[in-house]
Image 1: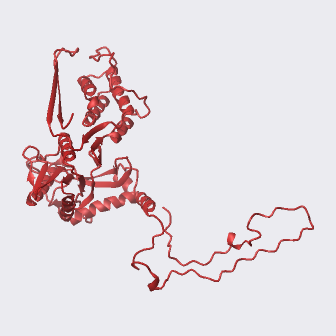
Image 2 (image 1 turned 60 degrees about the vertical axis):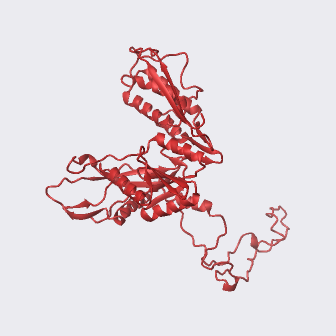
Length: 456
């Protein structure tokens, strides 16, 4: 980090430099001469300045508020540099590595301070007949839609695998929004010209000194506990219902409210919340209300959610997963692969390939799972990915080549996505198809379907 310089510090006039050079010498550097009879040059004398630099000015000459700092240039670049000076790009793998980095120490302390403010637990003597659950630090860099590290995030989580059912926890199920529900919300918002916003609720973690033979007794849920997601969902649900929201009958993560004819919608995914209203003023009031009740780490226009890059522009909403595609190629070392214009070959047919060379099942299944998540915004690869899923039990080299072809296609088309036009008709259309005994491996019939909300 560069040392801090006080711009208000009074400085003495600097001697030397161009200001000292007389006018007849300032145009260039005197050239050496072989003529020994040339008269010697007069010695250079420093320019005497009769003024002084002062930081004090008469109060009657100050324009604006005297308490306001002097602004001589745009602060955008300065703020950018100040932000990235306090963000680490390296994710530690253990506490020892984190404690060696001042940036991660700040992130850990912030987590501990949040825990103390919310009074999550208290320090007590260790009981003899109780199951003690350990904790673990988890570190992760939070990135924006361009992959730039915006924040170092440290969480202290409980080792929930040590919990005993019936003794340490009861009900654990907590509903989360499905990707299909998010897509419907985007289509509905585009139809009604609703600008969507997102917010992230901060977690609450602990802070106290170490004492031997003492443990923390929890008063609230902690990340890692099996009942933690359900406890948070119930807390948020009860608060929204208290504010007049109605919970969805089918989707338990959707909350709606009618405010004098204006429709307000709110979709939750654990501690990430999407909200919007036909009256934008009510959206800002909702953000203020949530900030008073919970500690928020971010309230902004919806632009990046669960790996989806969302652009709300005039005329509609466009979603794509370009960052996810590039991360996927990097993960499977296909970043430098040769692009291709189609996701699968029309001349080759995949089969069991019994005599083929086996490949690693774990890698193959990981590639399939990653591609299946991508199909939420890329229906163009749905058929080819689903075809490759048939061979996860015993994948061969030919099957891996087919999956890599899909990745090469993504390299060629990383920014393809879905467009939700503004004012589109909200008509639900369904399409289905059935291939009777066409599958060459076992001659089973394959049924297919597609559901569209809005103009196809």
